[in-house]
Length: 193
Image (cartoon, rainbow, N blue to C red; front, side, top):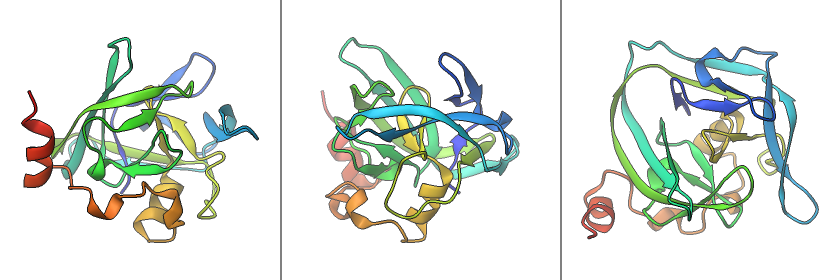
């Protein structure tokens, strides 16, 4: 599954957020697309699918990501390894491929720096939502404000897992990036001073 850890805040209105596990089909959620100039713009959308597993579940392959802005403000998110983040190039990076220093996008379009990405087991519920079918190429209406970082909904994640997403939508060097938790990733990311 392509899920968030329970209690991940997802934006539903101008200043309102809802914990991911509380969503039901038919609920409103803010989603993003891009205007003609390539700037991110947000609009109201409807959840068409909402599911997950109970809080007593142990998930073996979760990724804890810490990201921050230039003002030294940071946030954290716990997601499954195939969860997709919008990066500063407008492409998507799976959580398992994130490296320290990668640049992600905030809901306002500002850059956020990945400060840490580590994998491990997670005891707790996980949940996901989608806002309709994804055609494999158009992210409009499928991007969420997930605790102040832009990520893709479950429809996009499913396409990625099934290999049905346009490969040009994914971070260019995906195949050569060390996987979070691998010896190479730990050496490249965790031994810095």
